Amino acid sequence: MVWLVVGLGNPGDEYSSTRHNIGQMVVDLLASRHRAKWSSHKSRTDISAFKIGAGVDAESVILSKSKSYMNETGGPIKALASFYKIAPENIIAIHDELDIAFGAIRTKIAGGDNGHNGLKSLTSSFGSAEYFRVRMGIGRPIGPQDPGDFVLKNFASAEKKALAEFIDRGADAVESLISHGLERTQQDFNI
Image (tube, rainbow, N blue to C red; front, side, top):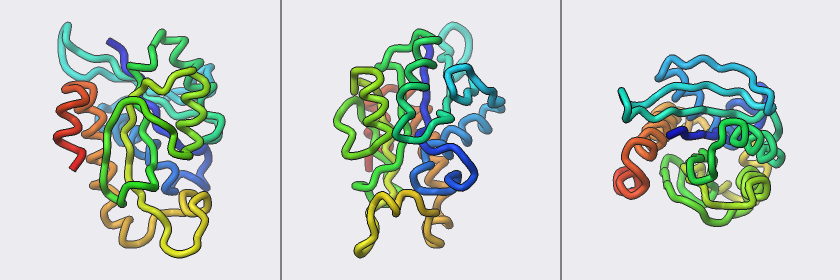
């Protein structure tokens, strides 16, 4: 089976360390863990591939990052999924989630987009919301700050101290979804 793991975020160095790009941070770590190199794909994405497991039971994994901005990410990801003949139920989208406290992870399949433009674009492009999500909690801004501005800011100093471990657990959650399925992953990570 082939899995497509999508790290949602915006392209460019100015966004690379922002809350909105935590999905891309997780796929970067997964590529590093598996010593997988990134390459450019004609679908306007960067991709990296590796296998989890051994022998006939090995799962093929394609990591992807769109070269388009968050609200236009669906088109390139749909083109990539079509190229590899991957159905939505074999896609895992990793994204920032305002309604979950910083450091918490929630995994699920399907559901609404909760105002997240990357999820909205994916669902629109696929005509389906039936894909897995690894929701990386970033919390809501304190005070009057606009949530749209908040997600495009770098993590706060206190958050940065815990960020590496948080990204590591996000990568663990993705690997668990692929290897053990949703129910066990929810038991282990949705705490």
